[in-house]
Length: 249
Image (cartoon, rainbow, N blue to C red; front, side, top):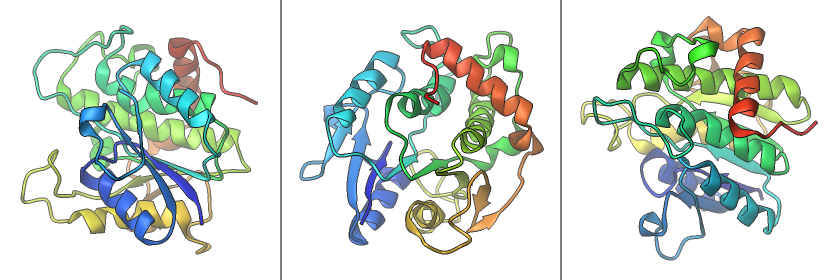
């Protein structure tokens, strides 16, 4: 069975993904922002994804443990306020959590066999300016969320091109009833977790592809920008510049 890291898995869809993987016999390492969010009796690694130093420390902790077979990048955040949030490193926080943190983990950890990015259909309305990924020119919480998820999806497919020996994909889990969604969201957590779990572990030929965007176990194209290789490379280059860490060859 696989050793799987699920980021942002102390509650919500991340916890649902981790619970299903664990019930299926996989060794699951869960992730929370801080010790106050970790659940007793479960294996957790800690790291605030709004801090590059914290992500580095988390990567150092993981490097001391057995290698991971799978990483499910699920950690997410949406700003509840009307003021552009800036991290201690000087980056727009939504972008830092959705893009810079998973990029840095990818650069600092041995590449696992599979990587799954839990994304969002908000990318339908996303628009990326590679010169302004931090939304310094104009910012709203909604635009920052959609655009950072679009950047994340482009990054995922760019990583898939760079590392053809791994299976790297992005997935829209659907509109799931969590603390980030209203009660009228149609899917429960188990339904939202289904496709990420399938991509993380299934031997189904449809799940053992790379460089695709999925929804309900089917490949979809919610925004053509995701598949633009120039945009993919621009996002990866920007992440290398912002973090000061290049991807390994």
